[in-house]
Length: 341
Image 1 (cartoon, rainbow, N blue to C red):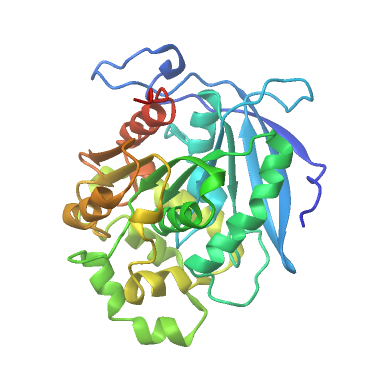
Image 2: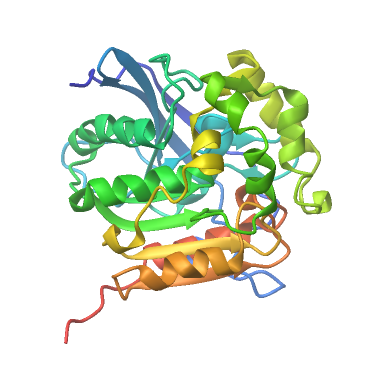
């Protein structure tokens, strides 16, 4: 079902961090926020999975190279959103601007961190379809045997942002035995009252007409201005994403945009059985508090949290306050198992 891991392996020496070191050891910043962990050497590897005839690119980071007798690490799988692929989503380098790689951050926290390019994105092949949410679930189903074989773990943590959160939640609904804890960032449930969803609804006909949509440099820049608070992002961030993404061309699949414009809700919260953390930037135009709290109230697992990130819009992981997202995630993923009554 899957290829063996490719031969190339890399050890990456991480850049210094702008917000200090010490989360792994519990050191807090001058503002009372827990800071990112210290820069350390990080091992990385590339893998491939097969979804039918489509090869899906996978990428992995951890502090040490895998070894046969090493104790297993908790696994965190990062699911990307609609407009860029996995590496620019979760392993971005912004020279001189501090740490933007969530993979680096959580590898230093002690996680075995994985991500993948979905069908039609980045280094992955394309089936020719529009790579909608249902297709993304099939991608994740194809990836899991590789992750389980390489890590020895049968249940893993998932994080998804934007439509990646919808993909991750839909996967948790379809394969509950594979999901340990789930983090949904910048999620959309029904989209009622959300400005960005209303903008997309004006383009339903063109999204239906073509399996791919335009995603050029200006579109990428618009992600960081559309919520009306561009100052919460360093302007170097979209330029770094553009540099990473344009090598893949200026179109990407249209399926998740179509799902979010015309087919919501895609996920039934009553069928998401695992513990869930939901985070929303206070200025996120893809959702409203009411929309997400409607989803949150229906989750059946009592181990759940809802966090509003202040001074943050849709792209929390790229914002100047991204450490707030990392803090909420780290505490949720490392929470003790509740004692049963």
